[in-house]
Length: 224
Ligand SMILES: [Zn+2]
Image 1 (spheres, rainbow, N blue to C red):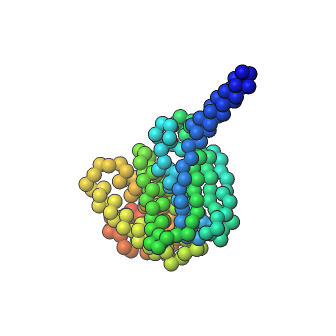
Image 2 (cartoon, protein in one colour; image 1 turned 135 degrees about the vertical axis):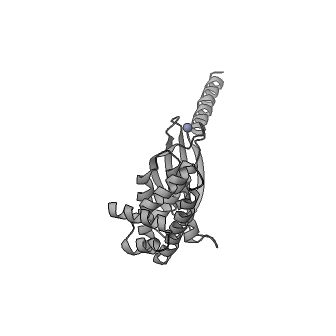
Image 3 (cartoon, rainbow, N blue to C red; image 1 turned 60 degrees about the vertical axis):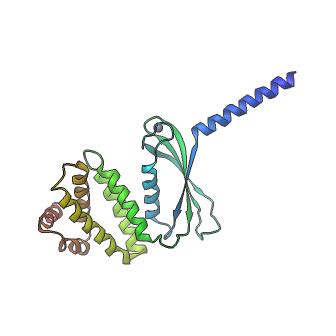
């Protein structure tokens, strides 16, 4: 009788512990192709995924990193770590969750530029969504990514410049037809970023943009 009560007692403790663990640590898992290692682009990709994730409890996209550990190496990559485990807390409701990123080899078609393009697009989206654009995050992350590319894959720089150029042209023409604040913010974010690029890269873009954008970029550069 006593042992029955005791075992039921322990069963309840374990059951409650199990529920508690489930509630507190909803684990989310994502694979990330590694183009080169170590890589700022890789970290930026983790941040991009994280900013798109909804809190499992309240549904807001407000997960913030409160801790981090490296995952052990896997057999398919020669790197010292096999991924990252991020401990996150929701800024809105306080819910804890764990997000794991597993590193793997890129598959055919997953080239570095496509990968960078996704990171850039998500960064641009999240930094332009509020009333005031988030210049600090956008510029700092993109500066780190550009430096990473200059060191590890310098032939890709022109592709990035082309992307920035196309976006400047696109958003400057869209601005004439919309009152959507995020379009204005996107144009401002990219312009500021371009205005602080090294001389050669800045000139590459400057000589290809329409006159109105040209004058705006030059004024920004003189102010920087
Ligand atoms: Zn939440």
